Image (cartoon, rainbow, N blue to C red; front, side, top):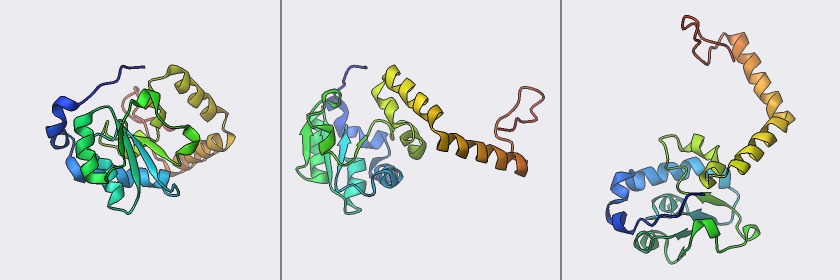
Length: 173
């Protein structure tokens, strides 16, 4: 795993480099379908609380952890006292005690938060977990059947999904 990093030295300008509260609200909207039934949420790496603020504005309760004391001070102002200084690589809570959790680092990684969340496990940087997820997806008959149906529907509709190396005509999935 990658070493933990504290963002204390850039906390005062972090939001302006990441899209601020507007971007946080967008990410919260993308995450919401995955955590809709949870009583409360744990944000791992809450940073300044921009994403958590998006949930709080929707009436949700968010608890957050982060390494950076400076970032947590900003998050505390947005989500209240429900923040703690902790290392995400050694979470201070038992997994079964948390109804839903999300890592802030992953949805902020690109401009496609929904797609990033579909690959949530990658934030851990664990090749064994990557292999297990791939194995589970390949063994999931429902998922394979759904993928086959999508390929069949695309073929019937004449939809091309990937460019081809042969003259740019496109390759059917």
